[in-house]
Image (cartoon, rainbow, N blue to C red; front, side):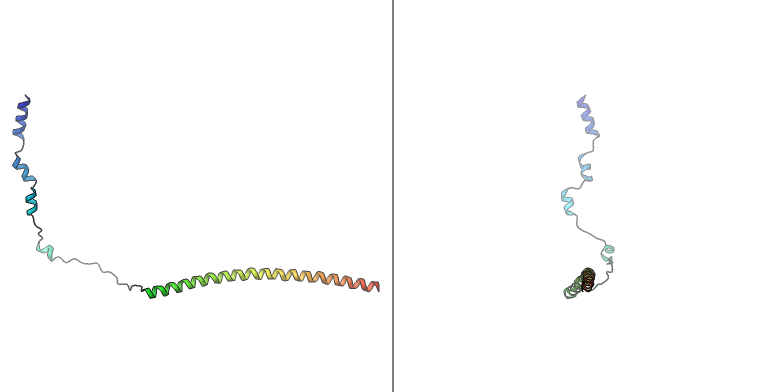
Length: 121
């Protein structure tokens, strides 16, 4: 029975040459050549329009970088100096007020001493 089944399968299966028509052999693949149609060869490929920019040269880039750095450093220095000026001005004002208070105390002592001297004479 198994022998009959395998014989029946052999008769129902496709013959070997028909299967080779579906897949070309290596020799057939090697014979194929590159072909294009005339319309594909004559087709014009449109390139996108690119806006032309002038490249930044080394000299202009260096000069621009130097000026930008100088301006930033100068601005930072300006704000630093202004801040230091305000701090020193406040300290100086406090010192002047302290000196004024000390002078007024000494003046009060001197007046009290003069009044004592006049009363003793």
